[in-house]
Amino acid sequence: MIRAGLLALVLASPAGAEGLAGQALCAAAWAKVSEGLAGLGTNLTAEVTQDGDWCSVRAPVLDLEGQYTPDLHVDRLMFRGSALGWIADGSTAPEDLEIVVEGLRMVVQTGNPQMDWLFAAQARPNGIDAQASLSWDAGEKVLRLDVLSVDFPGDNLVELSARVDRVDLSSPGAGQMSMTGFVLSEADLRITTHGLFEGYLLMPLGTAFLPYEGDMVAAVDALRTDLITVVVNLPESSFSVASKDALLALIMELPNPSGELTMALRAAPGTGPARVAGYAATGVPDTIAEAAPLFDGVSLDVDWTHADAP
Image (cartoon, rainbow, N blue to C red; front, side, top):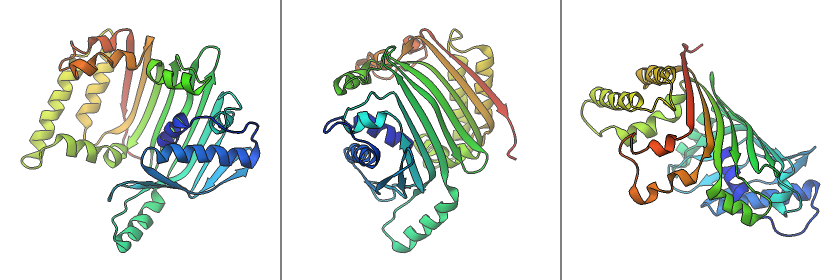
């Protein structure tokens, strides 16, 4: 929900009357978000109200197209910040934005009323809570993700912060130009997983890379060997020996990793769409050597600490 919401905020174009405030501002900003999501082929239902200095939406549902595609249900979504005026009518600079998500659930829609009810009831105790805080420095043209924290059921957590340079949100046109000219200069990620990988990544990765039939254990071992080869060949200018060892330890725990992963990326002068633009014509690089330009000036420190589930 947060990812889709942030994308919708980028797509929303400021236009209309100036000087909105309170409930009117909440409604106008929410309308822009809904319009942006509708452009992505989704349907967002719910009404927004003002709750102190927050805009609050009770029980929104993001209806994604396609049968068996999980719809996103939320107990409550809240947002606030000067960016709301920019989203709604362009009346304020988008200096800050906060988003809080309570009780996010993914509910499969099958078309069968019985199964749909059962899936919805089954999903209710497995809600996900999240919060995000962003800030934009107009002078430095820096967009900061001060925090993105996603608290999953059980002892499972994802935390991310990042700095993105060359971001100009002074006008809709400048914002669109920034979509191709921005560079990521810093990012810090921490993931605590005790079932998180199996619950959210194992199925899509497994169906994408494992054969439909045959010896699955042998197939997984072959994939693990391929991953080990990739890690060993990563450039030491970007990946220290300690970082490689951490990645190798994590790979050896797949498909049931249990512990904490931390990653700290630093890039000078930054990495962004311009770095990968050349591969649009040549295709995805087949070797680490061919991908060397992607790592120029980039360092990634990785640590993996095994810990049994509590």
